[in-house]
Amino acid sequence: MEADAIRSLLLQTFPEASTLEVEDRTGTGDHFQVTVESAEFDGLPLIDQHRRVNAALASLLGDGSIHELRIKTKGMS
Image 1 (spheres, rainbow, N blue to C red):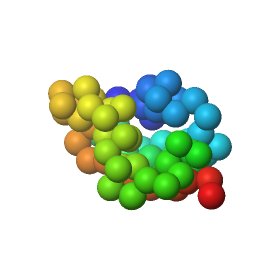
Image 2 (image 1 turned 30 degrees about the horizontal axis):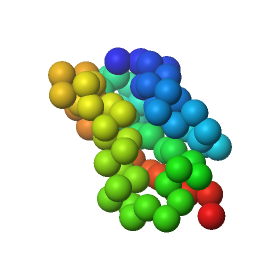
Image 3 (image 1 turned 180 degrees about the vertical axis):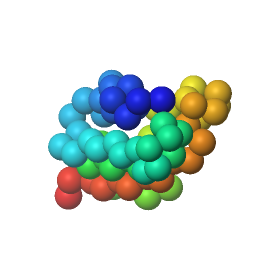
Image 4 (image 1 turned 45 degrees about the vertical axis):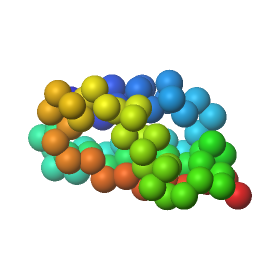
């Protein structure tokens, strides 16, 4: 899995994100860290922010393309 493909999926879900980073943590294409900062997260508990990221990547998590996913999210306010 390429980090750019994950970034593209996240951009579709969070088009207004001020920060959207995807890092292949191990170089093996299956362990990633994503960072998303978006006004869409304003007022949401952290768990709900992470659920939205997980939902955006559900197909890749489900088929094993992403083995490990670390998520950092932040609202704009």
